[in-house]
Amino acid sequence: MSKSLSKHDLAILKFLCRVSQPVYQNDLPKLTNMDLKVVTKTLYKLEKIGLVQREPAVHHKRRTYLVKVDRDKVTKVLEELGESILSVQELFTQIADLPCITCQNIFRCYEGGFYDPLFCQLLANYIVLLGSEPHRSNRKRANR
Image (cartoon, helix red, strand yellow):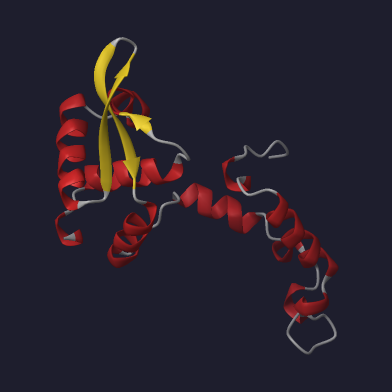
């Protein structure tokens, strides 16, 4: 099943996984910078596979579909293909946020050592901050 996914299929799946709510089908071409025909064919294919659901809806006085994604199935398929929901830039941003990257003791820090990550206050504060902001990766970084 997952071997037959094209680059357009993957792009739409990744986009739908990143947004937190269902999207109208007629808005997808603008949001993904794809041709309307390509989006329609791709969604039809993904619906047949069972990765997305399309429900008839009226949006701006036009008949369209509300597209919902099955995140668990999509995540599993993307993992099989070695793909990630996040882009390279988003992954880099998440890694760059780690306090260990800028810590002066990073090369002397190891479990059981004088600088132990289990007792690191910077790392503990970062984890608490991550827990309090569930959509942190979607936020634009103001200080960069």
